[in-house]
Amino acid sequence: MALGYVYFDYKYPQTVLEVLKALLKQYACRLELEELPEELRKLYETCSLSGLSPSSEQLLDCLLAVSEKFSFRAIVLDALDECKKDDLADILKVVRQLSQHSIKVYLTSRPHLSSVSEFFDDKRVAAFSSVIEVLADPTDVKRHLEEKIHPKQRLRAEIIETVAANAKGVYVPQLN
Image 1 (cartoon, rainbow, N blue to C red):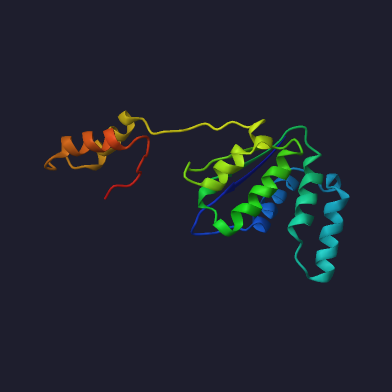
Image 2 (image 1 turned 60 degrees about the vertical axis):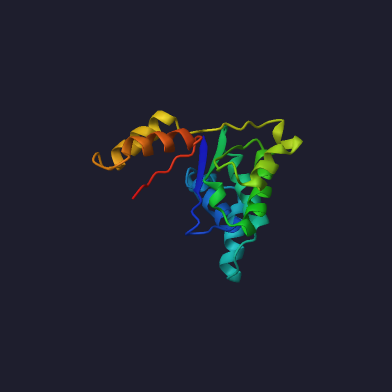
């Protein structure tokens, strides 16, 4: 089994090249040296001799070759909505290609990201995907607010009730 994971953070943007490198490294590290596919060995030698970096196509080819060594393959791309807009389209293209090679792909994103929604609305993707909506429970929101708002705060109860009623599943982890 091979599982690759990438977490997106707007403070540390990642390009499609960095995502592919991270996934390839995670998959390749699960293999013994003699199990590594010839494509990866050749790419390493070529890049070492020339001093050039591999292209996204070369990395994708190697990732697919390495993935064939495993009976179950999956990747998780977490917080995809934090990805830079310029890189998102390229990353979603790679996601589509990976999913077409029997690699299970799990994405997490806030729902406002239209390109991810459009990606899942595509009939070719929708046929084998599902979207699970995760919302904060109003009881959890209240509990969090009760912990964060001082008990002697004037209007505390009204603030907690109003925010919890209007959160509509949105969870704000920090209140100062």
